[in-house]
Length: 88
Image 1 (cartoon, rainbow, N blue to C red):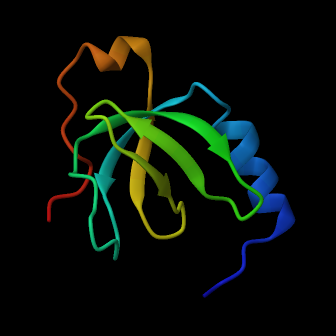
Image 2 (spheres, rainbow, N blue to C red; image 1 turned 30 degrees about the horizontal axis):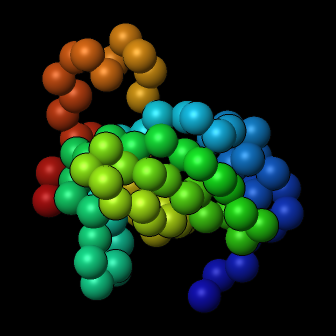
């Protein structure tokens, strides 16, 4: 397991504050992954750099920025059809 630098963790906390909307493009090695395309809201970024999200489907799960693929969404793009950035 690679340990994230303090600077990188602080950058994630700054870039993804509480309330930030994200869309999951692909989840790594989670045994019960959230489906690609699901949207959620960040409710915390912990001291390991994990983004904790409450997804619109009712699930809550930590997103690992160095493993999982996701992107920030805005109110404008939420109303548009967003295709995943990566096809699996």
